[in-house]
Length: 165
Image (cartoon, rainbow, N blue to C red; front, side):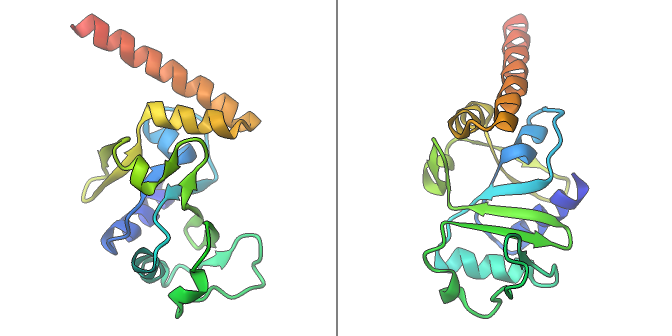
């Protein structure tokens, strides 16, 4: 999780708009399942892409599925029309999703987040209800298991809330 926190801080410090989603979001919400990449939902417009490119400098970003192709640091235009970016960096894998299956794009998700602090910075993390909806919509085996964990966490939170009322 430490290496993912470093990437999140780098994105935050460069004013990239993003929401933490996927397995890292599930972990931050209490799941014990491991994950091998950091998924964020972010607008893939010119302004945010320029900030993202700046944030990734020095991390040797590479296309995860085409490591033979050079990452274009000097041209936001080369990213126009991309729906997602799947990258490997020196600090781990980063998937930048323009939209989350079953729940929508960044603008629709912004209201469905919780703000989490990481010491000297904070960022938005998809809330548990929306993350369950997204993982259910994707429907892969690993997402089904993730949904089971998240539903248990949600049920525990509800029980704790009821007992404190």
